Length: 377
Image (cartoon, rainbow, N blue to C red; front, side, top):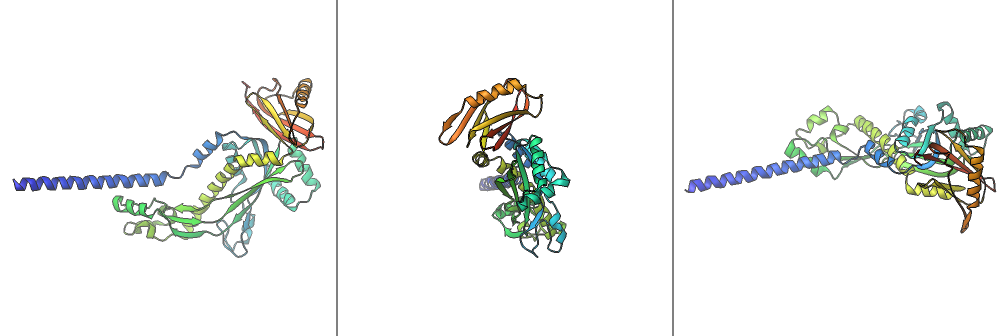
């Protein structure tokens, strides 16, 4: 009888130990899954961003993310100290910048300046001298139906700073002990301090209305991202967070993450509510449109003229229709403090596509906005 009780007790203890091991194993797998899925993919981030209303502007993108080093003789994430020609490199391409602005629906309309021209435009704007060439460029942009100029000013490069093991090492250790792996946990942190600066400029004078500086922030890398084959094999015997990193692989991984984060940060910053507010405050007039196609103009000066300019989906507005809309808008003026507020419903003839609304004040200043009209109004 005692032997039976002993066997039952041993079986119970064995079952409890097995269940405990299984629970620990599933817990470790859960931690591994959480670590691998903690970073939201760029596609999902842009999808969420695109669901928010775009800024009501048609924007021409020029300039370029050309490298600017933090100090002479210092290495960088994208440029080495020995390579003096890399200051002309463009690690974040203009095509990628325009693509992320389009996918994130940051503006109503986005277009890229010609490659042969955008380098010179950037230099002319940085010099702060109003040359005939610059004035011609601004006029051509206005003729093209754009409201603002987005200038990619520079990419400030900095060396990669290895900050060592981060707070995820317990997760790495647990998955390594229970599952035999841990190489996929981002347990080392690196920071490069690379920044991307862009400005939004007025198309009348080229003056800066607001600027934005994007950064990548700290970057966590797993063993498979920061080490080579020897390091991965070593992790069979040694916890992954104790395995040393390969400098070349770290540099490549940090560059890839930095490029992606700079683009996402740029799109989020440009589409943020503070950016909308700054553009409203610093513009000559703020133009907004409600769901009922009612155009609201909030101006610092009284208006002298209004112009409707269809950009797609329809032809020119009938002169009589445009004149009638202008009269209604001008007659709706009311004072709110020191501001002049106008409001009127857009003509029914404008039933689809993009339309640009331009307003001119009595002082000769011009502001504009671009709106996308649905067929159902």
